[in-house]
Length: 362
Image 1 (cartoon, rainbow, N blue to C red):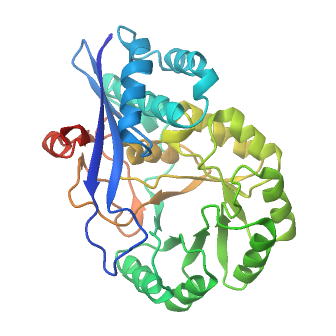
Image 2 (cartoon, rainbow, N blue to C red):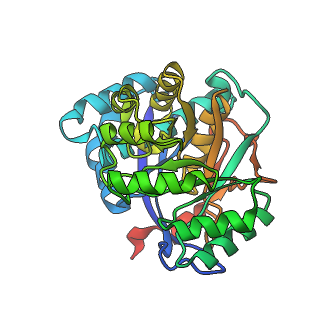
């Protein structure tokens, strides 16, 4: 089997209206979806992380696709090594590694389809019939709107929530609204200095926050994270903005986290994420993948998480697109996600929706 064509498609799809509205959230979801076609008629789909879809498309078309055309799509590790090594001087983090990740995911989709098996089976098999999906909320303007949204999300069947609020009042309002039995996390997304982080972590101890995620302004300040972890009873989570196994080794060796959060379509793809999870297990660190998006990246994350007995939850954006572009859309039922039944990633792109929202159409 040979790769004959690679297509990268930038998508801008409006989000469905939220009630209450989330004025601090983007109005649309940005994606770069990838199709890899072969001479045997098997097509693999993938997704690169959402930043700069137009630039991502150029990176794939001009830099990476020429390395893959004519190659055997089943030689996943060899092709990954070629892409990574030939772009190492300018691409071992950021947009280039996002693109490599998306292409690698599409190669796994081809492998699964060629074998007639889900990717999770190729990784050793699913470790359970379903996995807990936690709802990762957008950022809202007031504590009242945040609490109102949290209650609505619980009514949809979720039992674990994560906030992106940076104020203590919102966290307090949500905890009052949802009661003591719902697991609650907070993602500060790089909000505070180390002293501020210590004060916020201390305040959140009394609110039974399961983890505090990326609190420091410098998200790669692992010495600072380790210091915070040493002075706080709160669990510290990070990793969605780290890259490749080498980057995660630095994070783990620093003793910076209680929970590590690799992103399959940022950190290098499926193989890289498997290695990161194995490394985290060796360090005795809890694992929970990052997946705040809607496309094939969610399917890839689900396949990896289901094949790992130590990955306890999967992150889901509980808000909705104005129209779905993936079939099935992988929405949780009663707060749980199961693998789709089809081989590979188990999902397909909806062609007319993808064509309609292709950002290149202007």
